[in-house]
Image 1 (tube, rainbow, N blue to C red):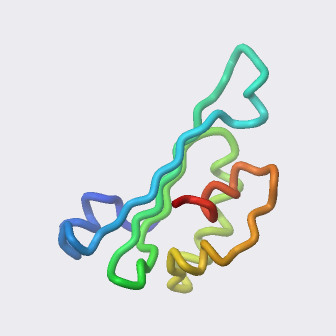
Image 2: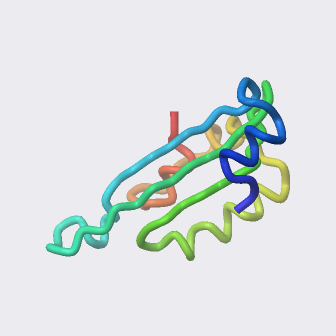
Length: 99
């Protein structure tokens, strides 16, 4: 959702863009022979690190991204995400614990 990393770099310039990434195996498939990797990315811009892109691919992303769409629309910053208590154990906690 929002801008991709290349779009953000084109629109705001390389120096203004900070990207946070996470990669892990979905808990639902971690102990099976069909392990499914998940990848997540936050694209932030400016000194306040306003989030302009939230991306995820993997098991359960369709469900968890809806809530983060609201945060993106409301102009959330990385600090807002950092100040959120992560619900554990969930895959969605990755978005609020990226460093």
